[in-house]
Length: 148
View (cartoon, helix red, strand yellow):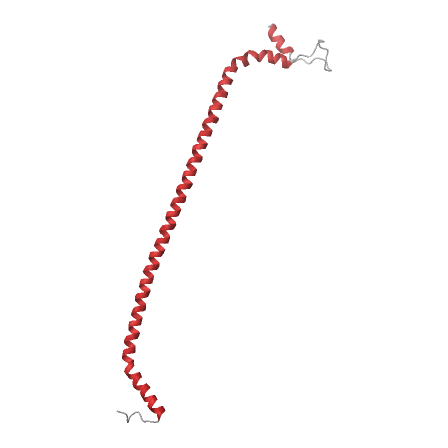
């Protein structure tokens, strides 16, 4: 029972106003607690050291994971750069192919239009030549109907 009484004496204020109490020096609670908990802390020292080793290993492993992630990100960026260049080359190639096909179609259409104009010119040439001769003869004062 004596130990319980010592425990409760810790909580008794010394020298405070109020009812009379035993005189004495205020209890050094910090020293008492340190003395009381010292064996427990000594028992926990190995556990605390182990916890620090685990934390250090965790920090080291986290750094390795970050490094691998950086390397993966760099590889992804490099790969995407190559893919983008390939995609641009494919788009340019397709545009060039389409442009060349359109040029062929335009040239073919222009050739057809030129052939149609030539045929039309061949059809109209005799009538135009006759008309030009008639205009020239009229300008010279001759009658176009009297000429052979």
